[in-house]
Image: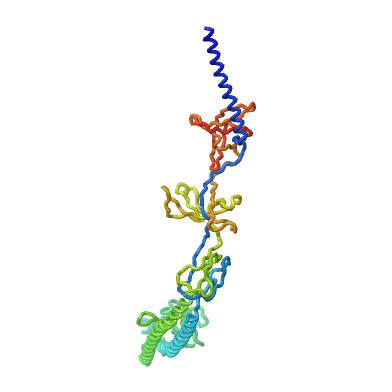
Length: 492
């Protein structure tokens, strides 16, 4: 029994020793990890949720330029690195022959335009003059036809059977209206100076006037007048009269009517001739194009052809920008449609591919942070300007091209440089944070190694909150500011 008891105590002491060695080793191990920097002091900070995408610096507008035809270079007006304005002439070929052709075509166009305008003007003047004269004649004959020998006739059954004769009032003036018809006059007693007034109906509608005996009074508003006798005015009371326009009972009625109708017919004939003349020189020809316009347009077209040939031997800046490549020099032979010069706008952007899973998380107009691999210490502000509507494919997922513009241009950003674009989506400000890799899990619950004052280590369960893309995680409970935690690779 004694032997067995001693043997048991011996085994127990060995186990205790091994445990002590393990504990000492653990302290030594933790101490070494602290020295190596694998500890972290809990404190307050900000946490970001970010989207980081790789891209390449490019220019918003980059165009290769060349001549539209081949030839010998005559002049080069720019050098590499030079800023130019839109439309500025950059280089030309030898255009001696084209200049001569343009000059000749300009003169032909000018002479053709002058000659056709003179011909058309002369053709119009004759007919316009005749038409104007005939129009005046028509108007005069019409006035004469409508206004000649106008008379007032007694109308109405009672008026016609009167026993006492009633002289007709005098009608004068020139009728200026356009309508033919009759004026109807009804005379009655009133408080007018003459003691009588009359209602006027017919051509001009209903109007009212005083009877005038010593001078002509108005008969409507179209230039006619009426005057009654100064004696025996009472005979006109309650009488009705009609003035016909024109007066068909006039002896000259048919003569003046025919004169007016013949003048009007001649006016219409002249009008048609003028129309034909205008169609020939101005309005339309057989092909539907005005005669003179066709002649002028043909000359203009020839001039345009030569001007186009002239422009084919020139290179102009398509937009404001910087010449970044220039392979031209005077005397060099070049082929048409061959790139010989390159221009960029000088407005930098970062071109990147956005994975499908991120497309719904960013939008045009959103701000971003741009960092160039060549200058890691510098951060540039950017704005998302464009996202492709059509996917461009990728390794197992769809990608969409996007452009992020620099808010402020910097000469350090050069085309072709690698860049990282960061979109900051969400943020937790001034919360307890620790690096997420200090957290380990036991049965799917988060723990950290908390260093105690007596150099011991405690496995402390914590409650995690917001997790950012920057490697930090929010601590809701389980730790306090100033606590020191140690790194552990354990996962149970």
